[in-house]
Structure formats: C-alpha cells, structure tokens
Length: 93
Image (tube, rainbow, N blue to C red; front, side, top):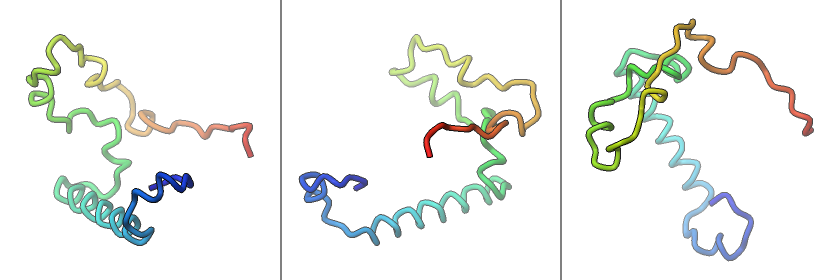
C-alpha cells in the first residue's frame, strides 16, 4: 500500500480512503480496549509487561527453549523513564 512502485500498486484494489478508514477503525478499537482496561492513552501502558498474557505465549510449541526473561523484565524505574526519555537530534533535515 505504501509504495510508489506501479507494479506493486496494481495489486492493491482499494483506494487510499479504504486504508484511511481501516486505520480509523483500528484506532477506535484500540481506544475501546484501553477504556475497558481503565486507561485513556497508549502511553500509560507502554512498557507495562504485567499486561502481557505470558502463560499462553510461553506454553506454545514454538516458544519451547526460548528465554523470555528479558522481554518480560520490568525495570524498577518511574513509568516516564521507560520510554522516550529524551528527544533525539538526527542529522537528517
């Protein structure tokens, strides 16, 4: 969908409006799920590994032998320090 290659664009039968509508529906569903959990912003749950359904992930046959300890680790830090702690300056304009 996000390509300027005419060959690839031919495969997509929709319109840009269809893509826009799809993402509006995704955002609406995310807001509904957040409200159901008692949150108002995605920023409130970023880095909150307690919300992950770990048992289902770990018991799958594909997960056998994998170490999830670093993925599920929750640092002992204020919530704000878990993500985007400082603005980055990129040399690209």
